[in-house]
Amino acid sequence: GVDEFFTQDEIFHLRGLTNDGVQGLSVISMMRESVALGLSMETFEARSVSQGVRPSGVLRHPGVLKNEEVAKRLRDEWSEIYAGPANTGKTVLLEEGMEWQQMGMTLLDAQFLEQRKYQTTEIARWFRMPLHLVGDLDRATFSNIEHQSLEFVMYTMMPWFVRWEQVIARDLIIDGERYYAKFLVDALLRA
Image 1 (cartoon, rainbow, N blue to C red):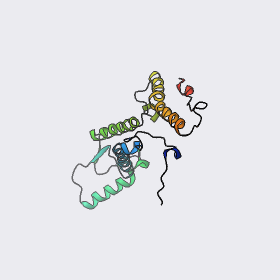
Image 2 (cartoon, helix red, strand yellow):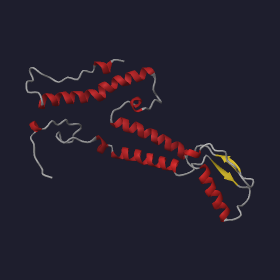
Image 3 (cartoon, one colour):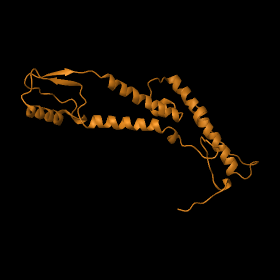
Image 4 (tube, one colour):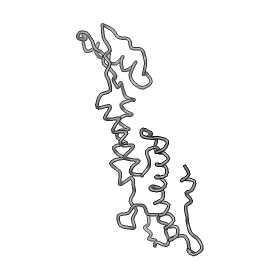
């Protein structure tokens, strides 16, 4: 609980992106909205799957249900027997002339899936990660993955390697004529 002040030569400080040349900026704080949207979508999807029927169709009754009690019983039994991932694929028993009407994927569902995919791309972009390294192989081929891996080393990792080398040389190495810091990336550059 006590504030202490240190000079630059007392602290090894690897700066990332900065707004003032001294204080590093957190990538997470810069991309807060992207992460928050991704987490919200994950929560929404998890609740949708775990808490009930995601209807792929509807039950159609030829007439009007007799009363609210019958409707409640039907709704409760349907949820108990068929709702949730553990009950997927069970045989449906319909009564009183009811029919099952198949429903396709709604535009809202398709848009939700598209948005989730975009969030993966957005978060990878903030960290300068090729999509194949975060498991998105939609546009991947053998030749472009090789080039993306090389680009990852050159454009994502190399700036960090250089930053580390410079800070090590500035803050940790006393005899700069004799010693130096160098990342050996030859193994990373091999296809």
